[in-house]
Image (cartoon, rainbow, N blue to C red; front, side, top):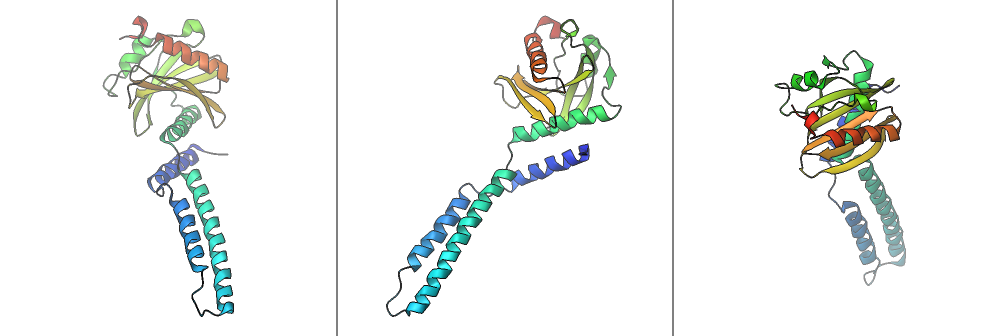
Length: 230
């Protein structure tokens, strides 16, 4: 069974791999150079013995095949190792969701009152997360906590849908442009990501995709509304 430590190690390996990616087009240049050498050497100098030319030709053919195989293998290795920053964050969100369910640290502040949960974050993080009340829509707020994702402290707002837990991770977005929700799956959990009003949000749960997308839509509708203010 995969543990949160395994997830963290996998994320670290993928993050380190992106720092040592080979230059773009290296695999193609290797193959091109090997073939160029083979073509140039296939024109024998005057006086070269036929047997010698034959041995060189066989060696160059083998070298060309090896170069082609090495270039293909190198390209495949790069495609496996180089992972986009968003994919790394997606893995970290899934790991954070699993981690919260394994122990007794689901919430730091346990309350269904957004006027209790929202002020609790003041002074603990450098931004004010939007906290909305969705009890009437079937997603009651149960509290919040601090978490650590994307190399920074983030707000984790905890909602319920029947027996299902929804972790809503929120922190400032690097860009100001809004993004519509997108759905992904990690470790058997559905995750919806969007950007709005300078914040990025990641909702993770074992809810089915349609229900989690409905949850995301409700949060987006109410973010910035009067009931989401201080």
